[in-house]
Image (cartoon, rainbow, N blue to C red; front, side, top):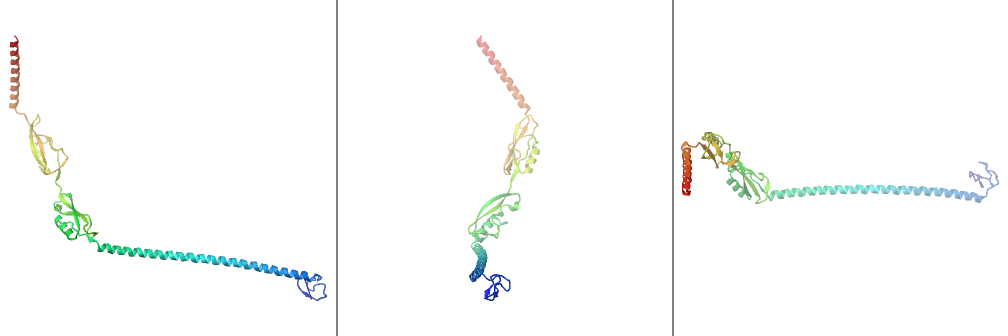
Amino acid sequence: MKICPKCYTENEEDAIYCKKCASLLNEDKNSNKDKEKKHVKKDKTVKKKVKTKYKTKVVKEKGSSEKQKSSFFSKFLVFILLIIVIALAGIASVFAYHYYQENNIEVPSVVGYSYEEATAILDEAKLSYQQKEELTTDESEVGVVIKQSKRAGSKAHENAVITLTVGVLDSRVEVPDVRGMMLEDAINTLNHAGISYQLVYKESNKEENVILKQSIRPGKEIDNSESVTLTVSVSKKEDDTNQNEEDNESVSDNIENEESSDDNLVQ
């Protein structure tokens, strides 16, 4: 049998042309065999290339899936660790709060009590104290605790110092200006301000019983137990002026007599 080298149709042994494609059948069998081998090799090489391409694709897909799995696993671990840390912090804060509550003393309220009563309450609670004074114009607050440094109900350790602010009556007064006033008006003004006074008289050419000066400057704040000294004007007496004039005349006469006696001695 002869095989057509073009269409590979089987023909009879004595055939010269292919019965299908009419090609010449005089080529060597070896050349046909070589062509068949080449054709087979080409098919094999194509198949190998396809296989390698497919394999590389499969390997890449496996690597990407592994990376995704590892990243998801790491994120999950971080999330679990974060939850554990938050839980531990909450537990520690609860224990610390209970420890603070059990090992500290609740500060009692002593506002409104006298200083002696307040100190007795703090002694019983095993707390220390110190006093601080604050001026007040309200007499009901005098000697009474009006503030405490730690609020009532808060916690403090044993022997913690609580500052007690005690009211002290504000006895300070502002000195009024009575200079130039008549004595009676000045006294009324000082009495109204609750200030005691002393009087000193001084001769002056001004009207009698006028305040010439005061010992404490106007506007100064003093304790109401202090007193102000007022200098009051008094007119000069006529007898005193006449006596002064007579004294001056006698002095001048004595001077003249001494001068005349000196002249006589010279002569």
